Length: 158
Image 1 (cartoon, rainbow, N blue to C red):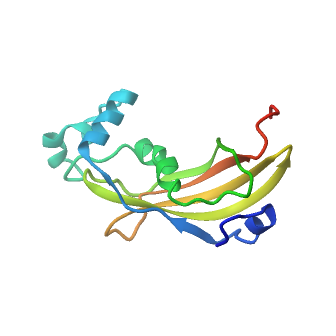
Image 2 (tube, one colour):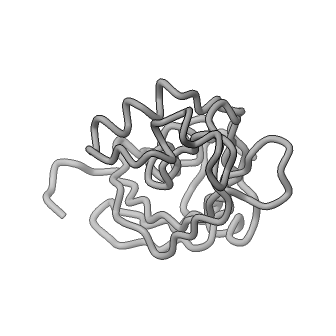
């Protein structure tokens, strides 16, 4: 993959895997902090004793925690065209939580470029499919399509 991508280069990667993040451990402290932040203290996330006899045999991460980690994981896969000075989260197309992520499991993100659209005025919209895998599992934890607006000119308002 070239180090300096043009918009034309990006288009040639549509439909292809553009990279994989490293593994990230989802420990109970992270789950508890997310529960505090979102005020979602459901027992399957935070009560180790009760969760041990629950449907998953342990506490599990919130689906939205896994989704919220996509920016952190995808930072490990630099894939921006030349001149990009800022990326903006432009939204989501589709999100599915397929398998719960147990506390202390490790996840990674596999990114596939789905679409590239030049929007004019220094903006490029990329649709990226993120497949978040749990180490040792065949089924993914989450599949989500994100929309990333790449800005090459931030002097003008969108």
